[in-house]
Image (cartoon, rainbow, N blue to C red; front, side):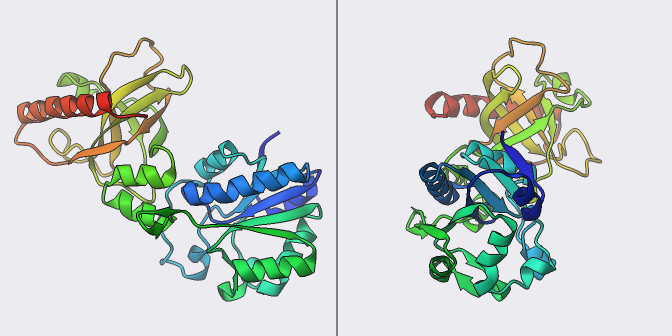
Length: 319
């Protein structure tokens, strides 16, 4: 049974059987992270144990350097879900606290072993850092592993456009709406997951009904119009769609929080596409920035162009 734990100690108390552990922040669970996760699955298979991931719900920088932590690509729950989909039998969302901050690099593996007695192997990325003041690296971790009787495996970094794939690079690409670069580094489409909220039916009044998804990510893409595919998770039905992420300045002057409005380019064949439905929407390509139009008619003309551009793109693109 796959499970998410809120601490290393709770995991060690409840989990039975040998464990191989992937360590990292895993924000975005991108292709570089997947190399580490694949490695821990291989090790777990060899020792007939379980593959688990130890990560943090909040970036350690929020504790060590408050106010200077990076915006995260995904929520803790989405990250745990993605880690499980990537082959983990368990995910540990361990808060980074003073106790962890004070663990010396040389004491790090004994610290883990004391809390997870059945720990057999550790897998990390090449740029992994650990211990007080981030004094340990992947090479020293491997050396400590030999002394402490733990197998340590280090995954090579993955390269995209001659530079190592990293969460920070994905954040930069996302902030610039370079969605194809985001996809290539993630290894999958960038998607929004949410529950449809009943809106004011403003889209329907101008001929373009929308499904409204409240969405407030830490790392935000630019406000504007995107083309992608929307899926109703209960039925599995997938439809081409165009989505506006923004404040709707032409028809609503007092909006304070952006919302994702999804307009299906084909008619849904089920009544479940309504308020309360759980949807995922991929943001495959950025079409244009959001702006305020002179009036509703100008807005409608632009939406027609957006829909046509989205249809042309999606007709020739792969999922």
